[in-house]
Image (cartoon, rainbow, N blue to C red; front, side, top):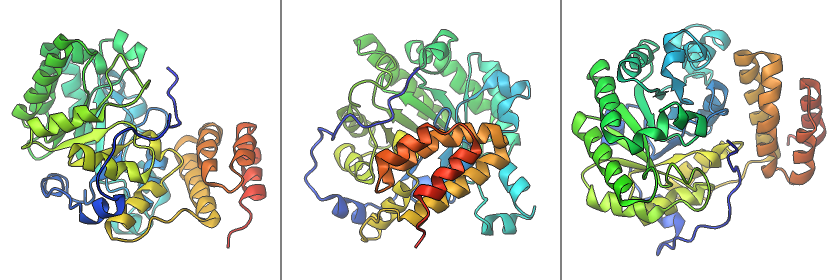
Length: 374
């Protein structure tokens, strides 16, 4: 499925206060860091299929993201020892790039914690086994994906499929929570409904309430339907109404977060306790730094050319370590295209990255367009 990676325009949702004032006065709900130590700001980097590997996560953390979520890891892939057992290991890059000692790795910016391992699957017993494996891999949180709208996922009765089948969803949630030790938080990713019919809206409510009743710490709710995929505007008023009706529960919002201002505008409009930043942080790790600056009462600064070059080089080095040169080159091409939006000559840089086919060509773009490092 093609996912639109550009904003369709400014949000239609009006707020009565300046973003700077909202940010300066927003204090994180104490239940969040109490549940996940180190989660010290009310936003985080979401799991992004095809993007949010260990390399992207570490770059986000270096720029202020307090918490990250993996791409959705298929239960059977985990059980069979596939991709998630190595490529998404939160301590892999620290082991391979660092000195081996925890303190040294943290000092080198290689600490990929706190982190949620997001799992997706079909059968309760397999999801429970995957959750056990996630715990064994030292993830801090187990996140259950009941939201993914990709067609092949729905056909496999995974992800967003469950929002149309609340009893099956509850069976999965119950199995996972029972398999995970009580001291490890479980969370759930949802969309606001499978579609806009009253029946599906009721199904969402049943699943949402059941998750909290079972002891899930919070839900991240993307305010589009499964059928809507990523088309059209996200429905922030849904989040506002949900928070009003379930005021005692920690709720994170997701949908149409493209800039740092959107983080605080969503909070002001909806009342969500935190914001999941997804497509808006691809090629833009500075969104997290900017959010922290605004919360300190400082202006949000744009990345300098030197900072852009450093982030690109560090990202490539981490991707190379994780995936090898050939795969890293392919992945960094698409990241370069997104990073280019910050460059003064963005269209030329974007075109140059688009034409890249090898690592040498990718490095040549940096040498040509990011040579000024003052």
